[in-house]
Image (cartoon, rainbow, N blue to C red; front, side, top):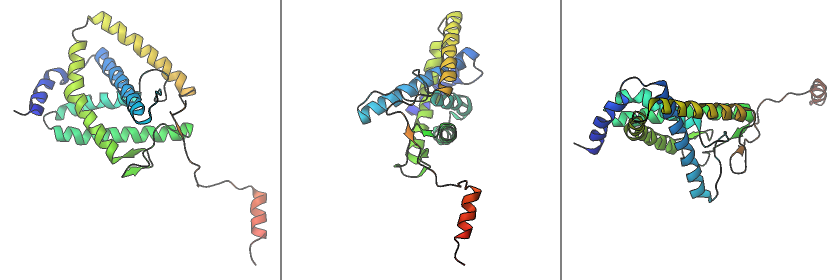
Length: 216
């Protein structure tokens, strides 16, 4: 039996079936925090500086929380097929990242990441290499992180775990509301979107001048 097969068998008792609201909240918060640690650590390794990554002020990146939670909820049914979990995870994560990037560009005119230098990228928001990395991340969430987290959650006293989740979700919600109005745009965090060469509005007087100057 391969290591993957053993992981598949171990994952079933902990990920198949319904989760409580506390467990869903715990998974979301854990994946969000893990994503923040990944982004901060990667930036420190590549650029040599400590930067609070993401739009929020706290140590969490909700895009990772949503992606990780959806991976567990949607892909656990395919746990016996790791290649399918990888492929679907890469597609789901890429769709979430692209939609989030477009939203941030539309609302704030800023980029919190840019894959323009990566091969097979789309608008610098998604790319093939990052999709493959996220596919591996989804596999890690389904086969490793979720089972370990759920096992830990279910060993904690219910009331204490529920109170902790409620407190952290409340802090996250407050941070989200504040950051929606005043997102984190510190040094090394955002990239200014280039000027777009789209349709421009021309004043009527300017149109008249242009028409007058047309060659007869």
